[in-house]
Image: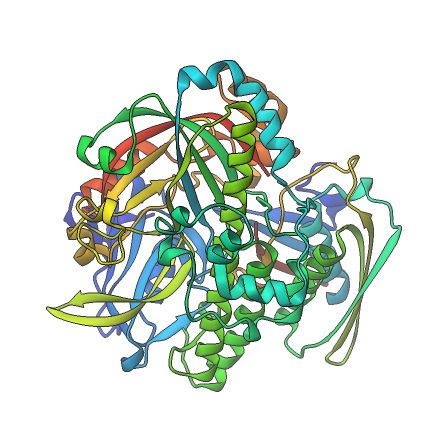
Length: 142
Length: 477
């Protein structure tokens, strides 16, 4: 699978020094989960990651775009804290309360190393619906 | 970048004239016409937005290696007066707080290195934790981590990593005085667990280089550099702790700006007045991250020494310099004949004090501060020296790297990591990495010509070329 296509659930867009990630789906929550998949695929190809460990995050945010940044950044922080490569993502919303779950496995020799993502930025940040498709995008710092 | 909107002051200095009724400070761009033309238009848009921030003193500037960042452009420099409502911006520092370069000079020559280069590459790669998911052996208690955040490289030396002699050649003698670990989130501290003494990935590297040519004999003598000499450059920053502080404050300052009534031209310029509680919290946390980075590079420098001495018993590795790239600190600068304390943001730019600056160690006082422009793993790097005129031209700032010429996505489409590593090996440059994706993203062809950046930096009066370093071994994350 070419990393630009991501089975059409996510893709990358251009940025000089860093990487633009974009998730596409029928709902905002799924698009944001797909944006997280794009982010973590920069660090390790997701098809090689076994869903052996689960990580959950919960946060409150009423701004849809800031929720995307918060979601990705919480995943990055907790994945680093627990030494996990993540490959599978689900996000749910109840008002301004967001609950997310990601699964993966501890880093091991057999996992292909990509490039570390430091954080999601507010650059090119957009969560919006066009023609019935939600897209969630931002630039991540690598 | 479309140069039609710019006005050329001289061949190496450009400005953006204000539109009628436009309220902002001056914008100044340093670089040759081809370098500026190669930049994204976003660089101009971003630095023009910086020029609209409150309390700006002098121009908002870009260095010759500038490229599109977030908030500030990479290669952006701007100074703010706290007594004039000046701000501090998380977007003006970035995620990788205090990312910078430690440079070590050795007493070895290229002839000493040649027969042991492969063994040295393997040993460095085995010793220096590098790349995504890698952890170091140093695990700190919460109390010990707070001591790192207060003590910086001075903590590392006390803990047995290196010598007091290193500290003299590190920015601020290895310790930023007003760090406030209590403003660093628990998540940031947890994220650092296992990351002390690690290199990271992306554009971070540990490179063994040889001095290829000397361009300024007097400065080279002061820096202890000679042709054929082996030097080591370590490029990394404050690791997960700094990334999390950047994350925490990018959002909290973006919200604070609304609360404080700051009209931001772009919310990614997330900032707060320096004198505000929010601004002081960010400065305290960011300076703690600077200490984390200084300690990290001190640890890596000592690990490097130990590897060298296992292969070259008795080899000398002295610190030439250690300067950060992504910072905001209070500095004294003379503006319009008056000495003022300003908070200088350098995002992807290096400090470059000229001769006689009181912050310089006696050894460098007569010539100026060493400045390193790190190039790609296939081309080389430059050592420069800060100039007197750089004070007025750029608040004593200079370029920090070659700057990317193409995105990581484009580089991935153009190069294969394995082929690139093999090609560089045929040219006598030994790459050690766990990430072939990372190697492709960091392909030499993905970067601007470092020679052009160094020349433009000199011609613009920001720093003067001293020596060119050619890579021999590169450990990449």
